[in-house]
Structure formats: C-alpha cells, structure tokens
Amino acid sequence: DTGVSQDPRHKITKRGQNVTFRCDPISEHNRLYWYRQTLGQGPEFLTYFQNEAQLEKSRLLSDRFSAERPKGSFSTLEIQRTEQGDSAMYLCASSKGLNNEQFFGPGTRLTVL
Amino acid sequence: QQQVKQSPQSLIVQKGGISIINCAYENTAFDYFPWYQQFPGKGPALLIAIRPDVSEKKEGRFTISFNKSAKQFSLHIMDSQPGDSATYFCAASMITGGGNKLTFGTGTQLKVEL
Figure 1 (spheres, helix red, strand yellow):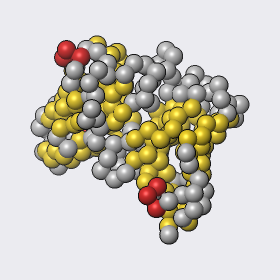
Figure 2 (spheres, one colour):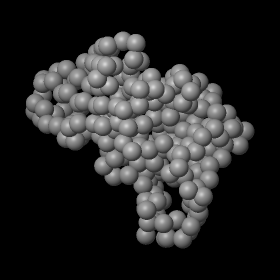
Figure 3 (cartoon, rainbow over the protein chains, first blue to last red):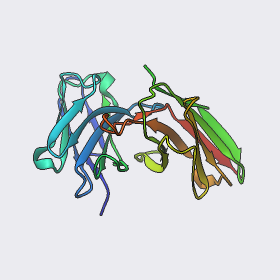
Figure 4 (cartoon, helix red, strand yellow):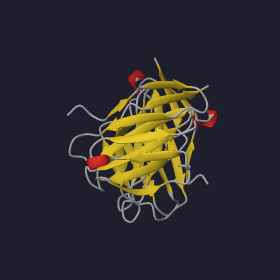
C-alpha cells in the first residue's frame, strides 16, 4: 500500500492552455475526492466519485473543469483554458467506503502564468 | 459562506506546553469532525476525529473536545514538541446524506519553540 499518488507534482502553464492531473487512489478505495487549496486557506471540495460514478460537483467547478474516473480506478482532473485564478494546489483523497477516513495525496501545484 | 471558523490563525508554544486550537461550525447537519495536520509540500494527514455523540476523544497526546450545544470543537496537543510544528485544519462533514465531503477551516500555523 503506497498511499494516494498524484502526478505531476508541479505544473507551470500559460494562461489559456489546458492541463490534466492524475490521481491514483489507494487500491480498493471506492470513493475518490478532489479538493483545491489556495495559499493560506483550507482545502475546498470540488467533486467526488463512488467507483466510476461522479456523485457531486461543487459550484466551484466551472464548465472549464472536468473530472473522470474510468473503471473506478484512477481519476483525472482537466482544466481547459486555464486562468491565473486557477493557480492552486489540487489535492486528491480516497476512502474505503463512506464512513472511513480520507487519505490525501501530496497534491499537484498548478501555476498559471 | 464560511461554514467552519478556526482560530487562532497562528500559535507559538514552548516545548512541553499545551497547544489549543478552536473551531466553530454553523451547519447542525454535520456529523463528523476531523482534524488534519499538514506539513509544507505535503497533503493533509488525519490526526484524530470525533462524532457528535461523544464530548471528548483522546489519542496519545491529541484530544478533541466537542460541545454540540455551542457548535464548537477544539484540538488540544499535550506536551507539544518541535516536530508538531505544522499547519492544523479542523473540518466537518455530513456522512449521512452528505457524501462525507469535507468543509475545512482556514488553518492554524503552529510553531513549537525549544
């Protein structure tokens, strides 16, 4: 059990470009969450999956954001036409079932120039 | 709308002292209250969590005190050590009917001095 992994760890992009992040949850964890954390703030919920089904999306997730979890394994978060306001740490967490602890990955730090 | 308010924003404690961080919530439907510890460049890690049917939970040097009527909960770190220096976040969620998506406080930067 190697924990939740995220790739890449850092991404620098120019405004208007598309970016995609990957999250690999702990094996057998059926729930996967995405959060966004800006400097000096707590993480904010973006979306979550149970297996391959995306069950809820926050109003923070504009139309430029899309998340998938094909086959209920890894998940991707894509941001289209990035804006400077998208600069943040994007965190992924997974849990085994509803009642259990969420384990967080190390995050992907996005910088939009 | 900030549903979980956390204080203080920063805290300096002497080695061996007690660190106390407080949180208040608004949504009475919250039924799970965890505390997370985060080091620079790392993701948050769960320290301890409590459900509203108990008023206190202790795990090692970490204790959560919970006051349901006041809608407040706090983290006490006993015998604080330099290795405890990190940012601490309280959070709240609805496990029942809410998907357990976490609402975090704004964080407390703790520094434990020798």
